[in-house]
Image 1: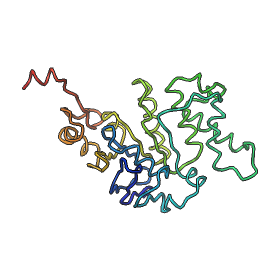
Image 2: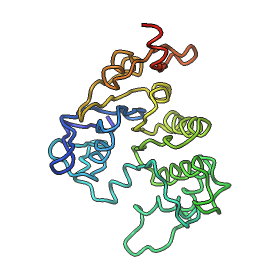
Image 3: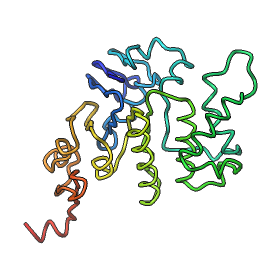
Image 4: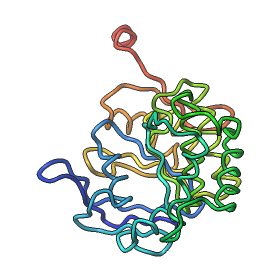
Amino acid sequence: MMLQIKRLKCGYANKFHITDISFHVRKGGFTGIIGPNGSGKTTLFRGITSELNLDSGDVILDGRSVTKMDHKERARNMAIVTQEIEDAGIMVEDYVLMGRLPYRSTFQFFETKEDYRIAHKYLKLTDVFHLKDKYLYQLSGGEKQLAAIARALTQEPKLLLLDEPTSHLDITHQVQVLNLIQRLNSQLGLTVLMIIHDLNLAGEYCDHLIMMNNGRMHVTGKPEEVLTYKTIEDVYKTVVITKTNPLSKKPVVFLVSEKVLSENT
């Protein structure tokens, strides 16, 4: 297993906590974390990455406890792409090269030829090499997200963590970003753990889902096992209809408006 979460408990002093979280992500797996706002998705991510101290439990990455890793070692093993990419006055190439910082020696102040080779490899793989001489603030939301993924890949991690990578994107860029992540997962064998709000995107792209609710795991399994109308209605308190995509055979969730519901009851 690439990632093992063992009875994890963490949170904020006298405030929200997640409790008794246990699951694993196999090497080369693509797992999505879903759940309503406030269910504990981001808190879980912060516990996994050691941004939050654990009250109890452990996070095991490729056989080693993350809590025993220093900052550089964690960054060489896991890379994080957040939902908000800063509009910094930095060129895309320099931004992506920041992914090589965990590999710098103590007195190394400049990037090596190997650093450039690796950065350019992932700039090309994410299809933003042509933007390398632009500033981040000149990019669209989708382009910034792709640049952030390129920087994360430049860390050459074993585990890629994504926190709502499609949250502010239109459908074209949502599909572009998720198709890229799916290719990285299938072609490079990169292990992916992703928070995602859109249930249809989660069901279509992930091979395993974890649904959070009130700081605990509500259910976990394949998309068709998790995205049932009853589970969604229990957790999200919203009436839905679930069907199957005729091409992918993945679950599709349909919302029902109050007006339509009242007319049919």
